[in-house]
Length: 232
Image (tube, rainbow, N blue to C red; front, side, top):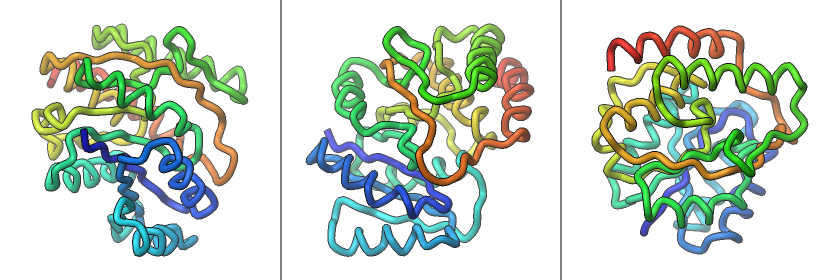
């Protein structure tokens, strides 16, 4: 197995060095690709420095901030052009905890997609307001009901993919971002009959930096499920 962790960044200088160090302490075989949208805080320069001394660290710089969905698509294309056979989506803010990676890499041996699930038994959310927890729960319930997909956490972004899944999905057809990007990727894999499994994760609020989630991203997810239902 040759796994690659894809981490999109925008102004994550306060997190990225420590995150990369923690991932490598847990696993000696993974490579990391940071997809940086020209962060003005110098995140890209930090990663470039790390990459110069470690062949397992890679940087893909994009000219402008263009959303997490396009950043992941760029990272997937980069990985598919090389010989990686497992790819993990991971945020840079420590809400996706490195301690779960070994569990993902073990579970992906028996399925096609492993979804880090806040809502599966054993999973959970830490330090969110009650309203935010309810919004996330209802968004997942809404999406699951409309799409008929047996996944408890459709909006989560800590996901492990086999290469064969990403090769089967037409990545250039995907236009959604944020929550809806995560829903669309899982739904397209489900429609192509790939096996999806959930692994419980603990999801704490980010410790440094600012959340990239906006009201626009939430509303996009609400209508996108209907588009997916009738067009995929």
